[in-house]
Structures are given as structure tokens and as C-alpha cells.
Length: 274
Image (cartoon, rainbow, N blue to C red):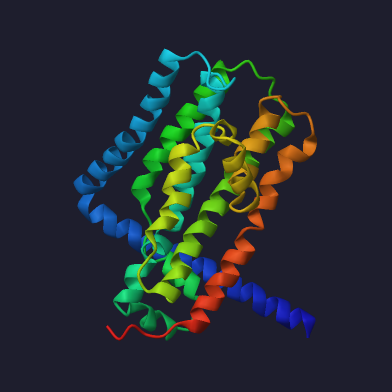
């Protein structure tokens, strides 16, 4: 019996992955129908993000350090945050656009289908153009690594990947909260953008430069510091405690209350009647 349940569970998981790949294939082919438009959006996304890099660059043209952080150290922080946010935005774009789906009554149609609701929502949109930001972040990251004087041990390299994975999970969780709030208020709440685009914008600097109050909030309320500030201290050699390297995994637990809020919203949902 246990083998049968395990086999059935594996089949469902394989089927979900196959369906999601099918969604991505359809979205990619639809975007490739308008190649010039896709290219312009790709370049536009790159340039819009590049202005943030310029703000960091001109800041360090005026000041040699920002609260003890050098240009290369800030670039390392900025590139990791930008890449994790961009990856989350690519695959969780459907969650960001979900409030409009509720208003138009399109969510009713998804509930009638015998597939995971989250899977269907994630498959409705995918901003492939955001890969331009991922490429930009990768270039900045490689430059910061090459020009810094850090001694890169295997654990420090692994910590960078932990930060990327934890950051992507954290931003995805915030997008999920933003989508779940639509069940309670129907209209999406714009203040949630503070914790998505706002963190991406201000997360280019280590969060301790904003003061102890902000650091406390971003540690115990929105655990952004667990994927940005604390592991960064270990990468930069400012903290030697190994536990700092694994803190991004604790931030992944943030997905649990986000998902519970989503499930609560689904149970509470009533059609908008559109």
C-alpha cells in the first residue's frame, strides 16, 4: 500500500512538472511571435535596472565607503539581491498579476480544473524579458568577485548560492502574500510593493546602513536580512560563525505562513460576479 501511495505521489509530481513545462513552452512561443517587441522589452528591462547600478557607481565616486562597505562589497550585495528578485519575478509573475484575475472572475475558471491552483496561476504569465536583469546581475557579481580581495573558500561560494536560493524563496513568498490578500480585499494592496520592489531597490546596500530599527524588522518580521545581511557578513569575512552561512535556509521557512495565508484565502473566496 505504501509503495502504491508513493508511486501515485510521484506520478502527480511528474505530471505537475510536465504541465508547468508545457505552460512555459506556450508562453515562450507566444512571445517569440513578436520578436522585435520581445527584444525591445528585453533591452528596456536591462536599461531600467542599469540605472540602479549607476546610482551605486556615482555614490562611490563621491564617497570611498558607505558605513565601512567598499564599492566591490556593495556590488556583491546588490548583484545577489537583483538576481534573486529577478528570478522570483520571472517565475512568480502570475502571482503578481493575480488580483486582476480575481476582479475579472477568471479565478472561478481555474477552480473548475483538476489541477493545482498555484500551478495554474504560475503558468499564466512568465516574464522571460527579466532574464536581462539576471544577466546583468551575473556580470556585476563576476566583476565584484574578480576585483574583491576576499579569500573564496568552498563554504563562502556555497553561501552565495544559499543567498540566491533563499532570496528567490523570500520574494516568491511575498508575491504569494500579495496574491492572497486579494481574497480579503479584492483589490490588490499596493503597500505590499514596499516588500518586493522596495526591498529590491534598497537591498542594494547591506540593510544595517538604514539603522537598527529597520534591521530588526527585516530580521524578525520580513526575514530579508537572513538572506542578505547576515550571510553577507560571513562572505565578507566580518563574521566567522558558520551558522551565518546557513541562515538563508531559515528564511525559506517564511514560505510556510505565506502558503497558509493563501490556503485560508482560497477557502474564503467568493466569486466577484464579473
